[in-house]
Length: 459
Image 1: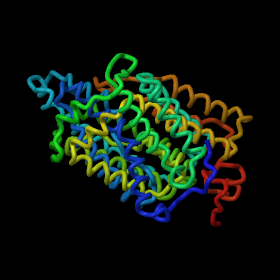
Image 2: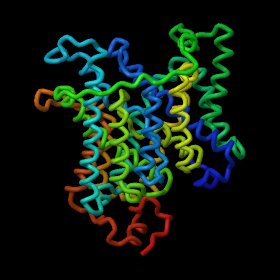
Image 3: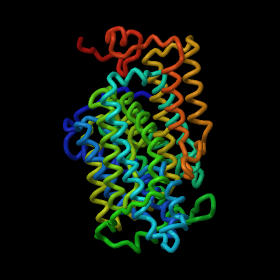
Image 4: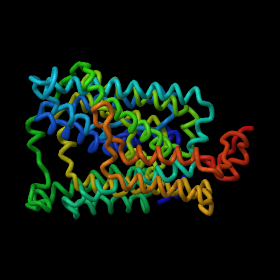
């Protein structure tokens, strides 16, 4: 889907009230997935796991920290990373050594300590990227395009699963977004996600009052968590602890998340039409993501990662101003001190999240396709076909990732990490690559290997 209006790069031109609404839209986009991580971790730790309040606090603080590290240029939101769920589950079940007599709650700080180390590993890769000039030669559109496609398609089952709990609600959310995005005028056109959430939630309230239920017979809305929540409360921070065993469980996961980071920044670059891998530089975004992850885990939060949901919102709204993302981050921080409001938003039916995700996740894949098409990747060349084919199969075929053992510790590379590694390696070793990034900028544009072929480059 392409927008038929000019992109907005300075949201101040819309006025403060509209900017606040746009920030709210981004906050709703990230909220469901961000709070799902602590909910799942709590199930592993028998209710003694991560706090939703702490998670929201560090999603906001981590996003702001990332923006500072990336020179305030990259419109990315950092939410909870799902990649570390397996590590949390493993640490929860450790029962040897110092963990033998620990409660689940006592094990949690050690899991967080492992994530602190994982985040610091980002700094090592950032240094390597900074020292190796023209790293972009390893990331041409024949690699980044298919990876971006995989990011969206790998999330698709989640959208369908959520929507299937109540297809009527999901379709209402989807229809509202489509109607306002296609036929909306002015501000209505650039906040379709927010409108989809609000209108479908109103429909959920009506359906719930009339006695309708979800497909499994459960109530459409559950306000029990709202009643039990206080109006104001400090997030329950805790200090992480370090142990070699927990570090060996959690830290290697960074290998996967660093590859996913490259794909996410490529997706945001393709969406906005700015090459963020060069300016502010992949090393800066990597540092921001890594330090945000370490900071969060140091005080009892989950790992952070750039969120595809918010990339989809960028594409759909056409508002590319990073200040709007920073507003969403401030909302997340404020919500972390208002448990009752967090619970109200948390009562949003999963079907609505599913309906919204139909657009957001599909939009990410569409961005990848556009990246390949606009950059004129030549698929008459066998090497390009091979690279794209292997990336797509790795990204979609290894749904459970690839697990192997290092020093007695199981390490899982996610499907997206495998796809990124395979694409980068194949592009580096297969013969016939005539792409040398930066050697001929004008020729790069003509051959379609710039992220933004229409953008004039300075000689």
